[in-house]
Image 1: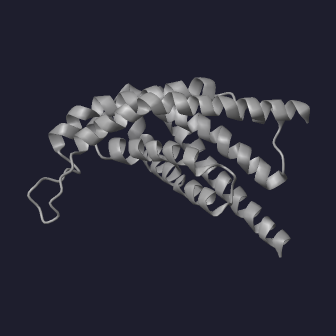
Image 2: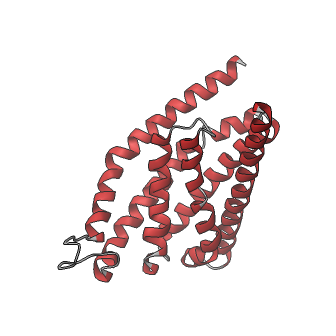
Image 3: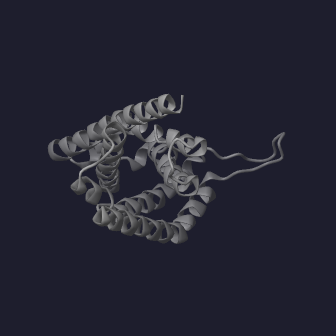
Length: 221
């Protein structure tokens, strides 16, 4: 019974990882193709559908951690996925005026390369029980460059979206109302920016620790 559950677990995770890998591969292909042919202003429109699907699929990774399907701690998975979903839906999807900014291109490309490597790495491990050493190195090394470019793009896009957020008053709740509650999305965005200040270095140090453990373990093997 236990072995059957293990097989089902590995089959599910393998299918999940390869499907999301295909989604991010499509995002990268469309982003690069559009950047070359039409310019950065049109990148978001080209990648919107696969980007929304691929990024939203990451919600399942929180469930994977909560149910014990994977060993990744939810405490590190949740803020990473939460910030990505906030940028994807709460900024880019919600405020079309920001979509033509050049930082959208750097964001999408940074995310896509990172996720193509990550999902193919875990897809290999679940499907075949191993991943090549070069794949392991890519998995735990490319973030050294792609994390700073991705985070810088995220912070920049939130900042440049602030005027549109304030002018639109989207997602704001004004008083009086029957709940006796108010909410201002503009100030929530400012708080989100503030969280990036301590959060980004902490997450970067966490990934450096992961890299050291993973690469030192591979050398021993």
